[in-house]
Amino acid sequence: MNQAILTLDRVDGVSARDYRTLKPAYVPQWLASLAIGLTLVAAIQCGWGDQTLPDLAAWSASLALALALLSALVLTPRNFTVGYLVSLLPFLIAWRVAAMNGAGLLMWVSSFTAVVLLLQFADCVVNDWRRERASPGAWLGTVLWQMTIVRLYFGLNELGHSTEKIFAGLGSFHTLEEGFRHLGFAQWAGLFVILGGLVELASAISVGLGLFARLGALVSLLYFLVATVGFGGEWGRGYAWASAGGGGWEYVMMLLVVFGSVLLTGAGKFSIDGWLLQRRWLPDALRVLCTNKAGR
Image 1 (tube, helix red, strand yellow):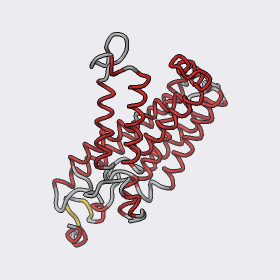
Image 2 (cartoon, helix red, strand yellow):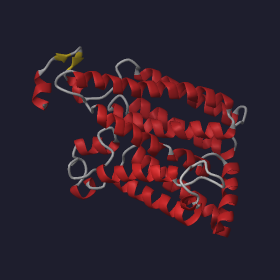
Image 3 (tube, helix red, strand yellow):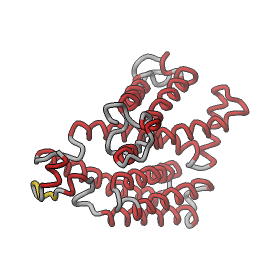
Image 4 (tube, helix red, strand yellow):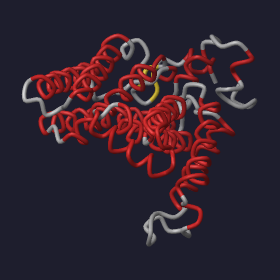
């Protein structure tokens, strides 16, 4: 297969070199970088101009977007997969911070940037489907893209919960701290709010971005089992998530199935693990934390 790629000049209008790389064909990187830069400007305005972002929220949104912009300018042109993922995670944190604090300007600009980033991802997927219909083949392929989309959504979904605990400001933190006190954590409530937020952030990085994904999936499984069996009560309320008296185990089970599947196989090629494994930069002892034997 690799021999065919190297000897082929063009297939269906796509250069042979492009078969070995992944990048959008129609949504340019300069547009994504510009959009993230404008979002950073909006965050600074909301934090220190109209002050719709309070205390810690102003700093977390601005620093997160600065990291996203740095990745978009430096990493993404060198390797789209790694740069895109590293930009996406802090951007999503800032977008969630804006929504939780009602920062209108930042919410609107973030929504525009989210559309650009989504179009970049869709551009890559559709372009890769075109490759799959041609010869010699695709960078990833239809079935693996489906699995990648599911992994990205459920992994990065944990950012919403993490953000409200450790990035959205003191108001959100103290509200959750009071809720944890009612669960029986007493004077340790604030500490457990922070620990929960850090575990959820680690889950988003490990499963969502695909960095030691199998290890992150295992930690996520244990975290949700402890949280729901020990404190949430979902398993005793029946199946439906929208049941009377609180949510049942429907959504929790969905999370466990997705994290369990990542534990079995790893994150796949569209991940930081895939990039590290392809370059053989990980020792054998760490590769098992990224993917199974077939993947290695």
